[in-house]
Amino acid sequence: MKVLDLQCRQAHVFEGWFGSEDDFQDQRQRGLVQCPLCGDDHIEKRLSAPRLNLGAREPVAATGSSGTPASPNPVPSGAPLSTQLPVDASVLPPALQAAWMQLARKIVASTEDVGGRFAEEARRMHHGEVEERAIRGQATAEEAVELLEEGIAVMPLPLPAAAKETLQ
Image (cartoon, rainbow, N blue to C red; front, side, top):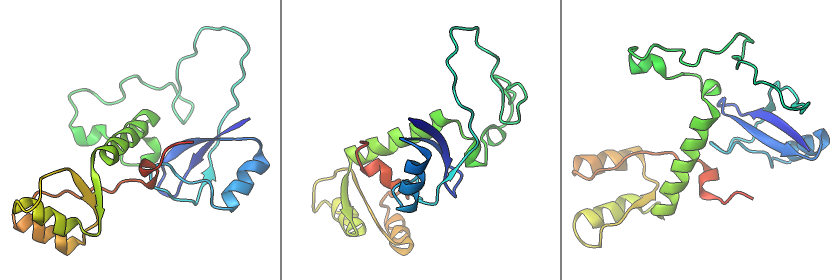
């Protein structure tokens, strides 16, 4: 089994498990390898080191991507929030990416997909024509602005396609 570190064009980093290098290349060429966050199928391998299990040893200090020791708290706690959040998605910790996917799946599981009828359905709920419930769907930018101007709370939230599917 080969475990590869992969990355899409949006710099989302994730792991893929394949039977062999040929397996990975074949699946990638057929468009079967996709980013779990955004669904992009333009996937590249990242550099990764093999894991060798040579017995129990004391853990070595973690290192950053440049090979220098990683600081457990690289940003002072008093620093403004904007400097604490990385801009490049490739430096987001995998735990944060996993948390986003977990949140996206919870949203999908707890809302009804009304598709292109989103604006119409939101208005019907707002005017009391139907019972209020949690919905999601698609609306144009103009429809979203109109809803907000009418006092209907809406929020754009692009959900990755992978959140709408079950993992195999």
